[in-house]
Image (cartoon, rainbow, N blue to C red):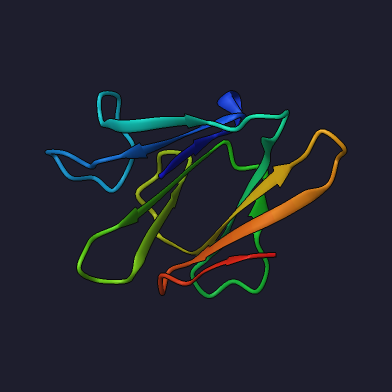
Length: 111
């Protein structure tokens, strides 16, 4: 999955093709989806390996699952550095928020 705050109401399912980088590259989109009803990605955050807190204000977030393994490979802003977790904050037109958290272990939760 690829999230970009510049296109805050869309997200892309992509297939990492040769060379396999674990990052979204132009031409790898399998399906682009839009959020309707005024919902949008309002912020993207990552937690670095071994860090207690997280960094928000990320502009791009790539999450890759290499099947059959359950692990998630989480990268931010086009950098190859792996992170322990990624958080996608979705806002409604009424400014309510929901957080989608993806852990490197593959666990996905909604808060």
